[in-house]
Image 1 (cartoon, rainbow, N blue to C red):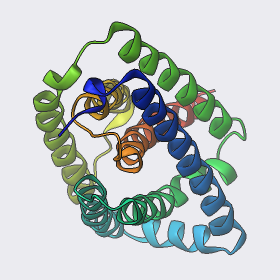
Image 2: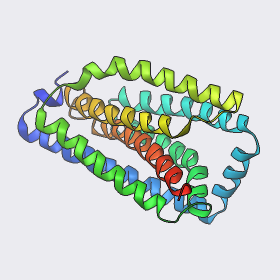
Image 3: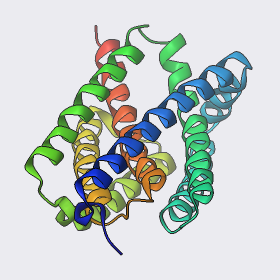
Image 4: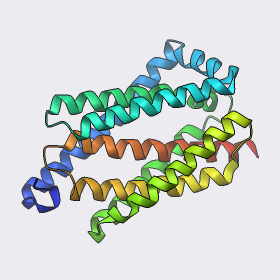
Length: 229
């Protein structure tokens, strides 16, 4: 397989353009879905379901993990662009459902500026990390092992916090922002060095997943700081 990094400059430029256009499209679809969930009352119902019991949140996390794994595997291993679109679509819908409760709480029970603030911070950090990945030309694949171990530890802590009823706090969110930043560097490098030029939809899914993770924990940090005012 000829990777994007090995492809001719014109083909590489086209891949980058398509990847980030699809990433922007995924973000736009995510926002549209959240609007629909809020307008139809589904976001409120999901929030009630999650807040009713801490084990409800665990069930949602389990379902999201399965859907996330399935959609990413589907997109990454598919040669058909339509199949890659299916994986991206499933993942965006899953993310929209997962985000609905925290966005609902942020919109109606927190400062109205927290969502736009977290969104702007996510955009600025993503742009900066992308610039670092592209300008240095470094292969950040070495972060893969660190991210796997860190991800398992984080998942274990999240599951334990749900089961035993303790909060992970602001420090955990800060650490997860650093984790998401490393994931963006890793994914940006990965799509260039390990993807072929016709896997631009799958590449956008990888980046979208890391951007969503970054936004989630930045939103939690901004909400926590806002509540202390």
